[in-house]
Image (cartoon, rainbow, N blue to C red; front, side, top):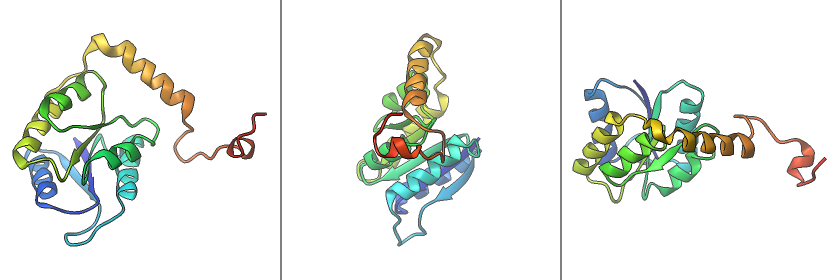
Length: 163
């Protein structure tokens, strides 16, 4: 599986997750700064989310200090279902019930042990067919309120005018 992995800063945790993903046989593409530097978390989230939305990566994994910022930013990209997961059960549910395609974790609050459990749950969970109606309702929200990737609203929409 092709995984886009991004963080606003490199850390022991991001290095652990990268190594763990590679050990599991995934092809990992890194986004973000080299060790010792930092990048704006919205930029990293955008890069990873766009890779997934465009089909260039199968899934994404993102980190920032709390994980909240990258989750919010990634979810702005049409077709992305980013889930902030602090434990294995949340990761399992995000995949099974919500068909999440970008996993977000906190650099501050996630240990390597917990991250390993989250990865186990994320990659072993299968979509729950009984949730398909709910998934489709979320897809409809995505279609209704978002413009296609890279599209700009018409000038009248930018000003809040309806024509």
